[in-house]
Image (cartoon, rainbow over all chains, first blue to last red; front, side, top):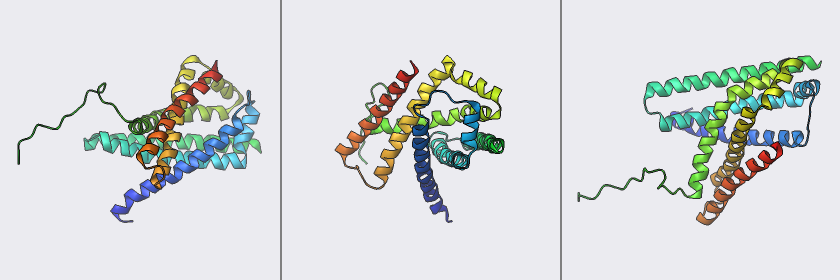
Length: 115
Length: 126
């Protein structure tokens, strides 16, 4: 993809992930709403199931991509020293990747635990 | 070129009056950054909640502590504002609600709607 198209790709990525994030959140909040207490087994089986397992993994991935585009925009706007901007971008990527792996690991363990 | 007075710069933040659309916009940014900063904590607690019966209970206890509940108010506002402002943005992207009066109205809806949702959430905590 040409350099000029890279901005468009980020723009589209931000919007597509935004739609998925919004739909997932509305569905999950409407399912959770009104429930008072949940046991560990219920919680684990719910998130270990195929729908929530795959849906939440996709959610975590969408968060990573969406946040990356957004924070990158913010850093480009306010952080003008190039070395500092690169440092913050690297730190952002690290935080997002570690968080994603931690969440996916937990979901995988929950999926194994339900069998 | 004629010498003119330098353009006025109203950098006094108290004097700047942002239009509702400006408030929605900067709020979108601030809420996004706040949620980004919360990701390590949220991901950590989420992982622990699935780890074991004991860690699940630890997470429950942590989420019910006063500092975390106060933090959750900020995050509920952030999520509400970011979601509402994001939906408004998507409509603007496809050219809907671009005219000044409607853009103003939807901006007010976003700004006040997020606060209203936060208040409703706060009430459920009481």
